[in-house]
Image 1 (cartoon, one colour):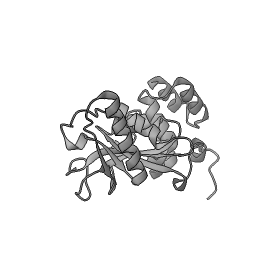
Image 2 (image 1 turned 180 degrees about the vertical axis):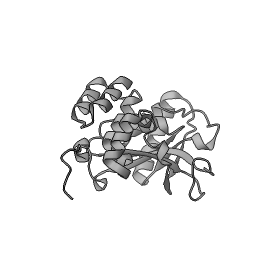
Image 3 (image 1 turned 135 degrees about the vertical axis):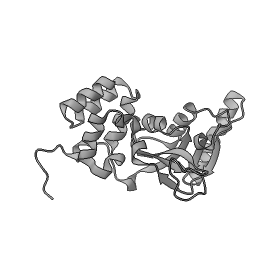
Length: 219
Protein backbone atom coordinates (compact mmCIF):
# COMPACT_ATOMS: atom_id res chain seq x y z
CA UNK A 1 0.00 0.00 0.00
CA UNK A 2 1.40 3.41 -0.94
CA UNK A 3 2.20 5.74 1.94
CA UNK A 4 0.26 8.96 2.43
CA UNK A 5 2.72 11.89 2.11
CA UNK A 6 0.48 14.07 4.28
CA UNK A 7 0.55 11.61 7.19
CA UNK A 8 3.55 11.17 9.53
CA UNK A 9 5.16 7.76 9.17
CA UNK A 10 4.49 5.40 12.05
CA UNK A 11 7.82 3.76 11.28
CA UNK A 12 9.62 7.06 11.77
CA UNK A 13 8.28 7.13 15.32
CA UNK A 14 9.87 3.80 16.23
CA UNK A 15 13.54 4.23 15.43
CA UNK A 16 14.50 2.11 18.44
CA UNK A 17 12.07 -0.72 17.79
CA UNK A 18 13.29 -4.19 16.88
CA UNK A 19 11.22 -7.20 15.93
CA UNK A 20 9.69 -9.42 18.64
CA UNK A 21 12.00 -12.27 17.59
CA UNK A 22 14.99 -10.18 18.67
CA UNK A 23 13.65 -9.23 22.11
CA UNK A 24 13.50 -10.99 25.45
CA UNK A 25 10.51 -10.59 27.77
CA UNK A 26 10.15 -10.13 31.53
CA UNK A 27 6.98 -10.09 33.64
CA UNK A 28 6.62 -8.49 37.07
CA UNK A 29 3.89 -7.73 39.58
CA UNK A 30 4.61 -4.49 41.47
CA UNK A 31 1.27 -3.26 42.79
CA UNK A 32 -0.96 -1.23 40.48
CA UNK A 33 0.38 -1.82 36.97
CA UNK A 34 0.06 1.76 35.70
CA UNK A 35 3.21 2.98 37.47
CA UNK A 36 5.53 0.13 36.45
CA UNK A 37 4.32 0.39 32.85
CA UNK A 38 5.49 4.00 32.77
CA UNK A 39 8.70 3.41 34.70
CA UNK A 40 9.95 0.58 32.49
CA UNK A 41 8.71 2.27 29.32
CA UNK A 42 11.06 5.22 29.83
CA UNK A 43 14.16 2.99 30.03
CA UNK A 44 16.59 2.83 27.10
CA UNK A 45 16.77 -0.73 25.82
CA UNK A 46 13.12 -1.42 26.63
CA UNK A 47 11.29 -1.85 23.36
CA UNK A 48 7.66 -2.45 24.30
CA UNK A 49 5.51 -2.67 27.42
CA UNK A 50 1.99 -3.81 28.14
CA UNK A 51 -0.03 -4.50 31.26
CA UNK A 52 -2.22 -7.44 32.09
CA UNK A 53 -3.13 -10.20 34.48
CA UNK A 54 -1.12 -13.31 35.39
CA UNK A 55 -0.15 -15.62 38.23
CA UNK A 56 -3.53 -17.27 38.74
CA UNK A 57 -5.54 -20.22 37.49
CA UNK A 58 -8.79 -18.53 36.49
CA UNK A 59 -9.39 -18.27 32.75
CA UNK A 60 -10.12 -15.01 30.92
CA UNK A 61 -9.71 -12.59 33.85
CA UNK A 62 -10.77 -8.97 33.54
CA UNK A 63 -10.28 -5.94 35.77
CA UNK A 64 -13.69 -6.41 37.40
CA UNK A 65 -13.42 -10.20 37.47
CA UNK A 66 -9.79 -10.79 38.32
CA UNK A 67 -10.16 -14.08 40.16
CA UNK A 68 -6.82 -15.21 41.61
CA UNK A 69 -4.65 -13.22 39.20
CA UNK A 70 -2.27 -10.31 39.85
CA UNK A 71 -1.80 -7.05 37.98
CA UNK A 72 1.50 -7.32 36.08
CA UNK A 73 3.62 -5.44 33.57
CA UNK A 74 5.24 -7.29 30.70
CA UNK A 75 8.45 -5.78 29.36
CA UNK A 76 10.00 -6.61 25.97
CA UNK A 77 13.63 -5.52 25.90
CA UNK A 78 16.70 -5.66 23.69
CA UNK A 79 19.15 -8.04 25.43
CA UNK A 80 22.02 -6.36 23.56
CA UNK A 81 21.29 -3.10 25.39
CA UNK A 82 19.55 -4.06 28.63
CA UNK A 83 20.01 -7.14 30.84
CA UNK A 84 17.39 -9.02 32.82
CA UNK A 85 19.38 -8.16 35.94
CA UNK A 86 18.94 -4.45 35.12
CA UNK A 87 15.18 -4.96 35.11
CA UNK A 88 15.35 -6.89 38.38
CA UNK A 89 17.15 -3.94 39.98
CA UNK A 90 14.27 -1.65 38.99
CA UNK A 91 11.77 -4.23 40.19
CA UNK A 92 13.26 -4.56 43.69
CA UNK A 93 13.67 -0.81 44.09
CA UNK A 94 10.10 0.03 43.14
CA UNK A 95 7.82 -2.14 45.24
CA UNK A 96 7.70 -3.20 48.91
CA UNK A 97 9.54 -6.55 49.00
CA UNK A 98 9.52 -6.93 52.79
CA UNK A 99 5.77 -6.77 53.40
CA UNK A 100 3.00 -9.09 52.32
CA UNK A 101 0.39 -7.49 50.04
CA UNK A 102 -3.06 -6.61 51.34
CA UNK A 103 -4.58 -8.04 48.18
CA UNK A 104 -3.35 -10.73 45.80
CA UNK A 105 -4.20 -8.33 42.97
CA UNK A 106 -1.30 -6.09 44.00
CA UNK A 107 1.30 -8.59 45.21
CA UNK A 108 4.96 -8.30 44.35
CA UNK A 109 5.98 -11.19 42.13
CA UNK A 110 8.54 -12.20 39.54
CA UNK A 111 6.98 -14.41 36.88
CA UNK A 112 9.95 -16.07 35.23
CA UNK A 113 9.74 -17.01 31.56
CA UNK A 114 12.45 -19.68 31.83
CA UNK A 115 14.89 -21.33 34.22
CA UNK A 116 17.55 -18.71 33.57
CA UNK A 117 15.27 -15.90 34.68
CA UNK A 118 14.17 -17.87 37.73
CA UNK A 119 17.77 -18.44 38.79
CA UNK A 120 18.62 -14.76 38.30
CA UNK A 121 15.56 -13.66 40.30
CA UNK A 122 16.33 -16.08 43.11
CA UNK A 123 19.93 -14.92 43.28
CA UNK A 124 18.90 -11.26 43.35
CA UNK A 125 16.37 -11.98 46.10
CA UNK A 126 19.04 -13.72 48.19
CA UNK A 127 21.43 -10.80 47.65
CA UNK A 128 18.75 -8.35 48.81
CA UNK A 129 18.13 -10.39 51.97
CA UNK A 130 21.88 -10.58 52.68
CA UNK A 131 22.28 -6.84 52.17
CA UNK A 132 19.33 -5.80 54.33
CA UNK A 133 19.05 -8.63 56.86
CA UNK A 134 15.30 -8.76 56.13
CA UNK A 135 13.14 -11.58 54.83
CA UNK A 136 11.74 -10.88 51.36
CA UNK A 137 8.01 -11.54 50.97
CA UNK A 138 8.01 -11.12 47.18
CA UNK A 139 7.24 -14.35 45.36
CA UNK A 140 9.06 -15.94 42.43
CA UNK A 141 7.04 -18.23 40.18
CA UNK A 142 7.04 -19.47 36.61
CA UNK A 143 4.81 -17.66 34.12
CA UNK A 144 2.00 -19.94 32.98
CA UNK A 145 -0.01 -17.40 31.00
CA UNK A 146 -0.58 -13.70 30.42
CA UNK A 147 -3.89 -11.98 29.76
CA UNK A 148 -3.64 -8.43 28.36
CA UNK A 149 -5.59 -5.84 30.33
CA UNK A 150 -8.33 -3.73 28.81
CA UNK A 151 -7.33 -0.98 26.38
CA UNK A 152 -7.99 1.83 28.84
CA UNK A 153 -5.31 0.45 31.18
CA UNK A 154 -2.62 0.34 28.47
CA UNK A 155 -0.32 3.39 28.53
CA UNK A 156 -2.55 4.90 31.20
CA UNK A 157 -0.40 7.96 31.90
CA UNK A 158 -0.24 8.82 28.21
CA UNK A 159 -4.01 8.38 27.84
CA UNK A 160 -4.41 11.10 30.48
CA UNK A 161 -2.92 13.39 27.80
CA UNK A 162 -5.49 12.58 25.11
CA UNK A 163 -4.27 15.05 22.49
CA UNK A 164 -1.10 12.93 22.33
CA UNK A 165 -2.53 9.43 22.78
CA UNK A 166 -5.33 10.08 20.28
CA UNK A 167 -2.82 11.18 17.66
CA UNK A 168 -0.61 8.15 18.25
CA UNK A 169 -3.59 5.80 18.11
CA UNK A 170 -4.64 7.35 14.81
CA UNK A 171 -1.14 6.65 13.45
CA UNK A 172 -0.67 3.15 14.81
CA UNK A 173 -4.19 1.81 15.16
CA UNK A 174 -4.21 -1.41 17.24
CA UNK A 175 -0.37 -1.41 17.27
CA UNK A 176 -0.38 1.66 19.54
CA UNK A 177 0.09 -0.49 22.65
CA UNK A 178 3.15 -2.18 21.14
CA UNK A 179 4.77 1.10 20.07
CA UNK A 180 8.18 1.98 21.47
CA UNK A 181 7.36 5.67 21.26
CA UNK A 182 4.11 5.19 23.18
CA UNK A 183 6.10 3.38 25.88
CA UNK A 184 8.66 6.21 26.02
CA UNK A 185 6.13 9.03 26.12
CA UNK A 186 4.02 7.18 28.68
CA UNK A 187 7.10 7.08 30.90
CA UNK A 188 8.11 10.66 30.25
CA UNK A 189 4.74 12.22 31.07
CA UNK A 190 4.80 10.23 34.34
CA UNK A 191 8.09 11.92 35.25
CA UNK A 192 10.60 9.22 34.32
CA UNK A 193 13.67 9.53 32.11
CA UNK A 194 16.41 12.14 32.26
CA UNK A 195 16.21 15.48 30.48
CA UNK A 196 18.78 14.63 27.82
CA UNK A 197 16.94 11.45 26.95
CA UNK A 198 13.61 13.23 26.72
CA UNK A 199 15.01 15.89 24.41
CA UNK A 200 16.54 13.29 22.10
CA UNK A 201 13.30 11.30 21.78
CA UNK A 202 11.11 14.37 21.29
CA UNK A 203 13.45 15.65 18.59
CA UNK A 204 12.85 12.45 16.60
CA UNK A 205 9.12 12.05 17.16
CA UNK A 206 7.04 13.07 14.16
CA UNK A 207 3.98 14.47 15.94
CA UNK A 208 1.93 17.62 15.49
CA UNK A 209 3.05 20.84 17.24
CA UNK A 210 -0.03 20.62 19.48
CA UNK A 211 0.85 17.10 20.65
CA UNK A 212 4.50 17.96 21.24
CA UNK A 213 3.50 21.07 23.16
CA UNK A 214 1.25 18.99 25.41
CA UNK A 215 4.03 16.49 26.13
CA UNK A 216 6.41 19.31 27.03
CA UNK A 217 3.75 20.83 29.27
CA UNK A 218 3.47 17.56 31.18
CA UNK A 219 7.25 17.42 31.59
